[in-house]
Structure formats: C-alpha cells, structure tokens
Amino acid sequence: TDMIAGIPRSRVQAIAQREADRYAASRPKAAAALKQGAGHYLGSVPMHWMADWPMPHLPLVSKAQGAKLTDIDGHRIDDFCLGDTGSMFGHSPTPVAKAIKAQAARGLTYMLPTEAAMEAGRLLTERFGTFRWQIATTATDANRFSLRVARAVTGRPKVLVFNGCYHGTLDDTMVELANGTTVNRAGLVGQVQDLTRAATAVEFNDLPAVEAALKTGEIAAILTEPVMTNSCMVLPEPGFHAGLRDLATKYGALLIIDETHTISSGLGGYTAVHGLDPDMFVVGKCVAGGLPTAVWGMRQAVADRFAAYNESRAPGHSGMGTTLSANPLQFACLAATLSQVMTPENYAHMEAGAERLATGLARAIEKHHAPWHVVRVGARVEFICAPGPLKNGSEAHHAHQPQVEAAVHTALLNRGCLIAPFHNMMLVSPATTDRQIDRLIAAFDAILTDLFP
Ligand code: PMP
Image 1 (tube, helix red, strand yellow):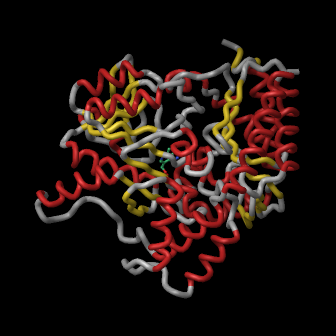
Image 2: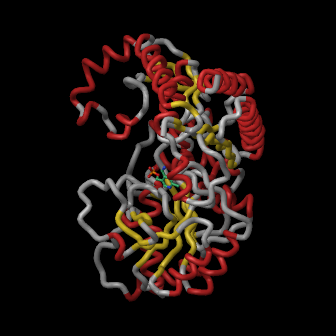
Image 3: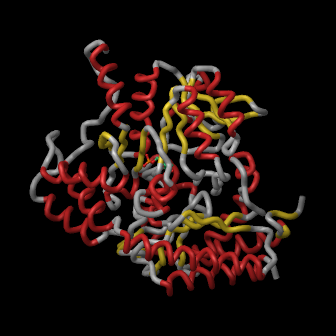
C-alpha cells in the first residue's frame, strides 16, 4: 500500500530526506572525525548495532551529565534515550561519580569482596526482596546463569519465553514463533544449534499456551519481563502474572522475572510495585548507576535445592561467572545507587515527569488524528506508530514501522531530543526537567504537523 502508519509513503520519504540532510549539514566535525577514525573498527563502528541508528552518520559525544548530552559539533541534546536504561537515573549521578572516584584509588578488580559488597547485598534484599544474590556484569549473563540454575535444580531442559522477547544475547532465548511453531530466530549470526531443543516460545498474554507448554514436563523455567518492552511495549492483561505464578507452581517450573527494563516501574521494580512473586529475579543496566553491573537472585527454597544439586555435582567448571564480575568498583557503585539514587524521591520525580510526557504525546497524537498510541511503564514511555493496545509479540511486530520511526527519530534529534533507537522509547530520569519534557512534546507535535498536515 502507499500508506505507512497513516501517512503517504512519499511524504514519509520526503520528510526523512529533509531531516537527514539537515542532520548531516549540522554535524561536520563528527563527519570528519568518523572519516579519520572509524575505519579501524569492523564495519566502521565499535559496536555493530551502532550502525543501526537512523541518522546519516553518528554524532560523537563530548560530554553527558544528568539528562543532557553535548556532541562535538556543539549541540546540546535532551537525552531521553539514556543509554537505553543504563543511565535511567541520569548520566553520572553524583553519588555514583563519587563512589567511582573513591574506589579508583583502591583498586579496580581483585576477586575478593569489600565492605561495600556486604552493604550492597543488604541493600539488594532491602530494595528487591529476599533473594540469595549473585553479581554479573551484563543482564545477558545474569539471565544466562539464572537459567543454568533453573535447569540444574529442576533437571529439565527447556526455557519458556514469549514470542518477540529480548533478554540479552544468550542463545537460549533466541527463538520465535512461526505459524505457531517454535523456531530459531531469523537473523542469528553463526548459530549452528537447534535452539528449539532447549526453548519454547508462546505468545505473551496467552495462559492456555503457557499451560500447554508446561504440561510437557520439559520446562525448567518461564523467563519473562513483567511487561514486554523490547517489541514495542506490550502490557500484561489483568490476571496474566497471577496465572504465570500459579501455572509455574502447578507444573514445577521456576518463574524468572527479568526487571532490566521494568525497573522503571518504581522502587523495587514492577515486582515490588505490582506484588509479583518470582522464584528468581534479574536486573541489570542501571542497577549500579551505569557502571556495568547486573544482579540475579533466587529464593531461599531455590538456593536450598541448588545447594543439594551442587553436592551431587561432579567437581569441575560450573560454566557460570566471569573474571571481572563482582569487582570492587561494581560494589561501590551498586551500594551508592541502591542507597542514594534509587530513592522514593527520585522515583516520584521520574513518575510525574513520565506522566507529563505520556499525556503530552498522546494529546499530540489525538490532535493530529494519527492512528498511533502511547504506553507507559513508570519512567518508561513509548509511542507506537499503530493503534493499540498491543496484546503480544506478533501484534508488536506488525505495529513496528521502521521507515516512519527513522524519520521521526532524526527529526527529533534535529530539534534537540534523543530517544532510544530501534524502537520509540523515552526515559525520564531524576535529572530530567519539565522544560526538557515540554520541548520533546513540542518537537513531536511539530513533526506530526508535517507528517499529518
Ligand atoms: N533483559 C532485558 C529485558 C533487556 O532489555 C536487555 C537488553 N536490552 C537485557 C536483558 C540484556 O542486557 P545487556 O545487554 O546489558 O546484557
């Protein structure tokens, strides 16, 4: 068809071109620096997904503080991407910057704990509930290790995940539904395993499908986000989480809740705010204020089963853990974040700002009669270029409009607002001001005026 997301394709293309030209014209220093230095990297980017940002070329950041970025061309940008949650509490929160400075002179990694490690353990339980904790460096690893424990204690092979989910780059979850059957996800690089031997995918919000999968007796764990945040944003229907809990218990599978993004929900994450009761709990990204850290924990009952398993296990490598994890810098930042950054006051500010943002964006959408909608999970807001609400990963997949989204992203950046790439996500940090939020709403409204004249 000639329409995308309610807009004639030719108009989307014209606006995308206009915005790309404007972007390129305003960033000559970045273009020159990239031309000089980027060629040393594979594909000219230090991380392959940096090539997927929608602008004609990358900006180079000179500084970030709070909710502001400055690039080398002198643009001051309101940052609503915030490292896709890594910096959800703002760039370099003061308590974390101080903790880094203090630890910097005391050693960065030594395979031994510190007093701050003891403090961090206590704070983790205080914030997230009674779990027996372990430290990792990425949420990918935290999920990977959680799954190993779940398989170990249940003696079962498979993880149950939801179609369209993302839990990091662990292979175990890289499956999807094709005509109702679980298959390896399309696009995986160099994957030679049949991942369906150890994973089953069903649709989010489909409890009968969850039960059917559990009935096979092969499922060690259900691994889920409380809200699907990685394929647009899909909210759980009423009773879905209670159903997951009951079904996991009934069929002897563990329930692993990955809070890496939904930590935006409020103090203690979605689990605390909505009273979920997982067997295992994972959170990464912003948990140490942006210093690479993730944590995973299990209930005492699971820890007891794991201890028994360990006693019967042959001596040798566990297959878990990495050398630089649980280092003293992580503990310093973790303790600082949990005690001084992840506070009720900061969450209240984030919640109010995100409400303001979501309301403003929804009003603009309504004003322009765009067939779009807005979803919010605490400090996390997303506009979706299709009608809503979305029920599951398949619907989210069809709602995604990459061409329109790319044009909007670049246009927003030209107006001083950065949002998360690959989807339309915006975060409100404790440092984000109402003025910044209102500027983003005004920029969004201006772009919609062009798209829906
Ligand atoms: N879990 C969820 C829900 C995520 O969204 C992500 C990353 N987007 C991860 C885990 C993996 O985090 P990392 O890339 O830090 O390993």
